[in-house]
Image (cartoon, rainbow, N blue to C red; front, side, top):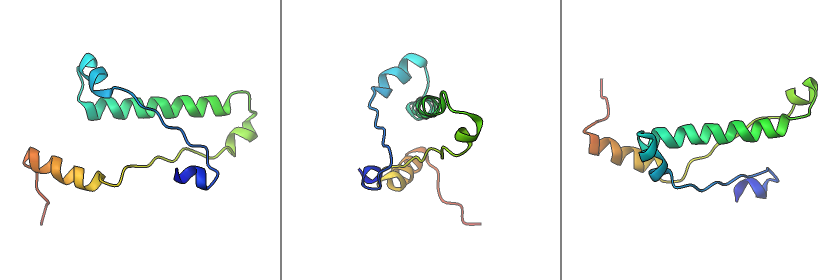
Length: 88
């Protein structure tokens, strides 16, 4: 993993988002986004627990990444929905 190469803590989670999104009656994209932010929030809470205010301030932050085919996926999904690039 790229983060590990730079000695950055890396967290990887795998879940059955499709099934959970269906139960929650939400789109996969919406449900997955909510889960990502919930997981990131939990990681951050865990990291700052027991720290004083000064230590909390200098803990850094969370970096997210996307996979290499995100742009292609976005273009494909827009084509399926009938969206097109704006040219004004």
